[in-house]
Length: 153
Image (cartoon, rainbow, N blue to C red; front, side, top):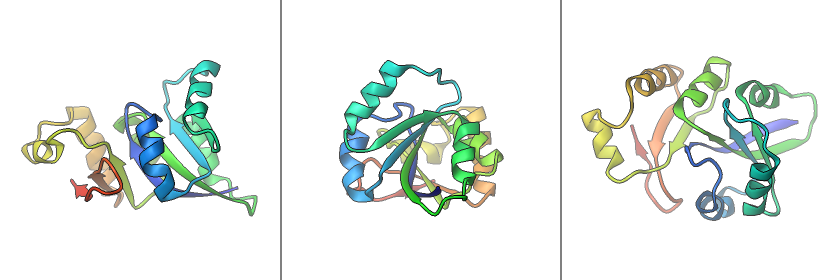
């Protein structure tokens, strides 16, 4: 299966109704993939996420399983997906493992763009992870809804 990622996002809330309602009609995906290396399989959580978006497939995977999905090119079937990383470090781990994409969206927090300019939004580890991600040519930006401008940082 060939994966075409329509949107990659870092959001600690993972898959929730706002993401489903705001983005799904604009990016038209069949799959929502939540990447969370600390996730332990929980059928209740998976069912709740599936109920959020009734006509799409939802899966929760760790970085290793995600990379197997990305690298699987054996089938000619194309899978359009939105990928949601639980946190910056999970995105970092995926990039270290070979994940490549043009840009990654972050949930916009109040005054986050201005705070980034001052250097007080991310922890030292997150800042280090982001610097590495940027060295791979991946752009990062804040955006809450499809109607908002992208604020690159």
